[in-house]
Length: 239
Image (cartoon, rainbow, N blue to C red; front, side, top):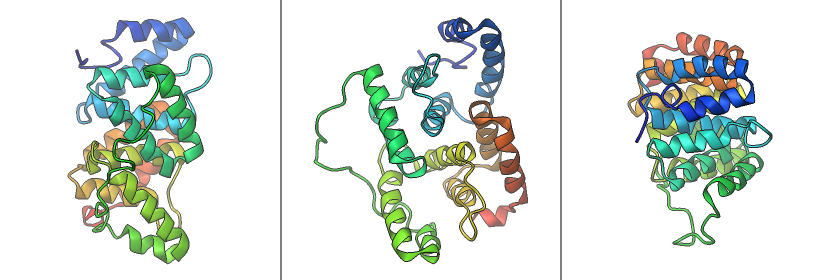
């Protein structure tokens, strides 16, 4: 049964955190419990965001690593293995294929081996998913060959069928914060992802909640400049 707060309602999780160190367990439970209790982003999406951050941080290795707990949290909130794998495929573009590889391997250890072959021989995605965003044109301004490759690969993960474009944009914002992806000249990944989120129904308040939530897992210092960047954007900039 899904929890209303995936941290404060899960006594086994709290015991595991205290087993690492009781001082850490207390501090982490209170900090994480507060952001998991924020009202706008649902518990399942929060769990998927933590998995994406784990890929960026390479949190799937070492004693006390949180990756297995986050996978279990996602499953308890109704995620399927395919949905978690879609998050990992999405991180290939924004965190790196090498980082996602270890996370896929760790997922196999948690959930068992993956199917040996794709059912239809290739990924199924919507090739038109980013057509109206202007991203293809913006990337081409940087470098035509780079822009073409980036866009073609990005379309394949943004167009996967399980997670909505809005939720993928919010996951991308969390990755931006964890990776510190902003202010790259003419093309700012954070602004691009905020625009996609807004165009697909995300509110400014939801985006703020994602930034706050991400800070627990990526560091509060990393969130400061993203709040400043968001505050500098007018509503008209997000359309």
